Image 1 (cartoon, one colour):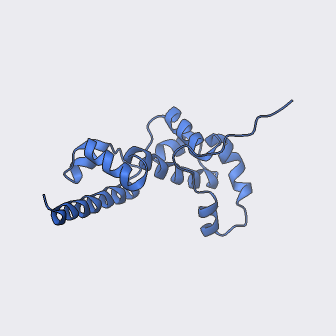
Image 2 (cartoon, rainbow, N blue to C red; image 1 turned 45 degrees about the vertical axis):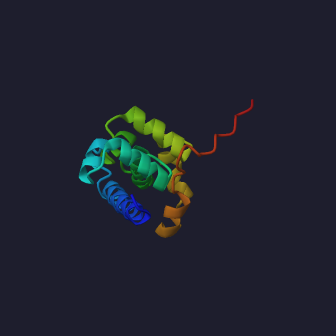
Amino acid sequence: MTSRSTTEQRLGDLARLRRVRDRIDREYAQPLDVEALARGVNMSAGHLSRQFRQAYGESPYGYLMTRRIERAMALLRRGDLSVTDVCFAVGCSSLGTFSTRFTELVGVPPSVYRRDAARATQGMPSCVVKQVTRPIRNREAAAPAPQLA
């Protein structure tokens, strides 16, 4: 294989990875799995997972859950839906998985976020709220400080 064909292959893979990422961004509330995403771009699930992680720093599933949590944060800030309703609205089928992932990314459980978020962002323009409340990826949320008696 020549370096030109290797470069063309790499560019083709990147274009397919962008299509996968765009599909996740659009269809985050739909039931998506790595196999279906891979079929959509004619890749194996393993190859897609490896290439996606190399290009974007996280697995396709991790990226999907981050998108779902971002949308959940917006819905919870509105305050008119329960945590369970938000969980199902963003495409999660397990309240436990949703709550665990939410807590990993945001640093607080969804019920606490719902209670506190409306007050914290009151009066901020929506563009600022979006930046300030963006979840941290890859389990980087700061651990809450221990409460001393």
